Image 1 (cartoon, one colour):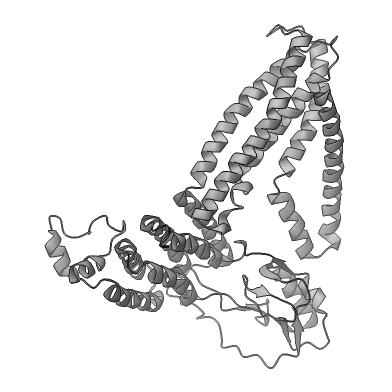
Image 2 (tube, rainbow, N blue to C red):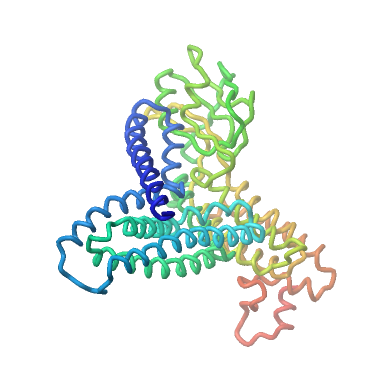
Length: 472
């Protein structure tokens, strides 16, 4: 009776999910035309990142497949496992009850693993495992198996069940294998090096999207931009919504509005800044009429915490947070900090090769329409090195790896990037002098090393005393 009741409840839930998904699809089609960009973006993120979407779809698929399997059983003469109806019903009842416990156990293992990883790494990575397509797909498989087994339980005893029983057994075996695979993958993905590599890879995609133009061919940053001076703003708009972090903005919509009103629009906060009530959010230059703040707010998206969508600096922030926690006295894991510097090195190199925006966006007539604040090269270098130098200044692994990173970037990036890197290298030398009182330790700390303490890239056969002497 319990399985039958659960099946009936699942039918009702699945019908509700069908209505919700169909309604959501229709709603998204309407909103695509009539609703603000920020609302459409919020709904897209719900459908993209929510954990329940895939299980809901597979539950619907399971209910739709039930009559199909029933029809196949009636028309098929194939006998594979020679199950009786009573035996098949008993097996399906066991599988259904086990799958419910299976899903609960799966979430318990996942939550425990994520909790341990977030406490050891950073709270900002706690939601990343839940975005995994593998995780969502496995949950969908578990739900499909659960519904398929419950559909078999409520099948009349007089009907053939050969094909459906075989499908349920295969789904159970597959679910067990997938469970073990997902637990292994989640464990691997939450290792520090895997988390930081994933953040770095996503950060590189964001950097390439936000800064698509490469430096090169002798063209310097901002070289083709004339000096811009704006008059006093004709209107300053204050934020009047719920407090939150600026996640992204619709540049094209703001350009269209600025061209329509023949004015320039300044987005006061930078992506990643926190906005509270009465903070200035827009300044208008040259506007001939008053514009409502709600009209402009339709083109920005706010949330509770920063995301990587249009915020490449947040990739640095996440990796630095992991390194800072690793360097804390409670954990004292400088090797993880060295692994973090590896990823910081990759991100800095990617940013250093690209033309960073000057904050002025022009239309086709070269008229400034949008002013938006973005981090410059000095901001990225400071973010990437300051806290690592402060927290890891007494770790010989960290300072050696940082020196190797800075010297490599100075030699591989365009010359205009060298000033900020040289300043960071000078500060690192001062930190080493203060952090290592013994001359021998100080000399070792001055050796650049991509592994932290993996050896000096000196001349073949050079002795340690020779390397220390050359470093001193």
